[in-house]
Image (cartoon, rainbow, N blue to C red; front, top):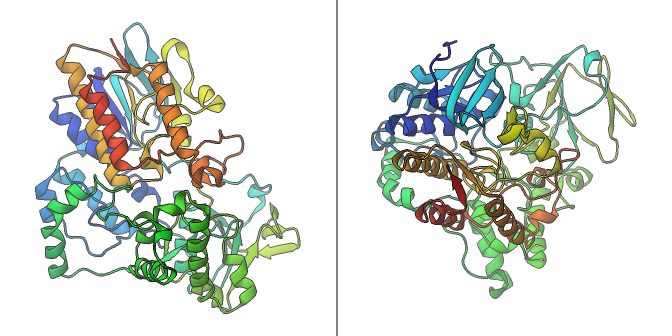
Length: 536
């Protein structure tokens, strides 16, 4: 662990993942004294913590990377279309070494509290090591999905086997070979774990609350020729990501869904499906988000694909989503997931029919009996967007508590700042696209650039503080809600709306107006010299 500096800093960044590393590089170029604090022992953020079996990106590697360095783009060779956890972590370690970032990072250091001092107009941060640090600016780079949720089942302490959450998977791994394993959760993470371990374990019990759609992944190992072709397109890709709805490098389908005859609609869906990517969701027909009739027809197409993979019709019906349309919840990629349920050593337990009552010494008890297990894997998701921030005791002007205020209502201005908390910049926060409706690297790099330019503006103009006015914050929330309320996504229970957390305010957490519209709104604020923000 590197000791924290004694002298006051210009900025502290919380988190050494994708956002934090880039933010450190960018603020250094402004000449700031910066420190990154991270609870992990290494860089990578998501790709440090999520080292569970099968962890992999579902954004292609050509857009899941930094764009700030042409040299980096030229020297890093991605091995495949969708990198696994180990390759992603190697990439971030390479970036940290390539740009000499580690000397300004304190690992194994969790921030417990951040308190604004009205008199000095600076932040005081307290850490779990007992050290403190003082800074003018604080930038949170915590990621949208970094606060794991552990379900409140009784009996955790009674279970004599191994209990592990996917987001805190031991770095040394977990021996599952020949074990009786239970996986709770069938979201994106659960799907990756289940399809990866099914052939290794003696028996696999899958505890499913909500059936999910998933698209078959086509993963390609790259040759040198492939990489050369991808690099040749980098100038186009670098521009294209800013013009698409979700920050990928391909435009969505522009033809209205019902303007096409049925056979052409079907052919288009088949083509999108065969791409082996998320194109059918993020670059297909936008009607899946707001037109119930189109949503149902496209959902039926995907349901048909799922049924075709599963031998037992009764199991198939349990795995076919019926309570939401395709694309209104997070859509993952899969690689053999549905085929797992054709194996003799796999059981599907529908928690809507037979809910979990408690954990026991020997496994999990449902309403119809006990399932004996050696290992229980919790793939139970996150307190998205808010949990990592409220885990820190953040106190703004006059001692106001972000944790308490967000219990009543979650509020931000463009997901970048919060009224009442001067000089606190947030990334991956609610009401920006990055938490759900954007290729994360696209939107996170944009947010880093906006924050860096904002701090640069303050320093160039002799200003010490910035925060959004209450009026500007309300204006953004009104705009956000007006867009969200037109969609089927806002009407669907999921982590997108906070429905996975009891008592969480029910509002779509991510901006759904698209990357170009969000970027335009941010640029307008900047061009108007931060109109709507209070500069001191």
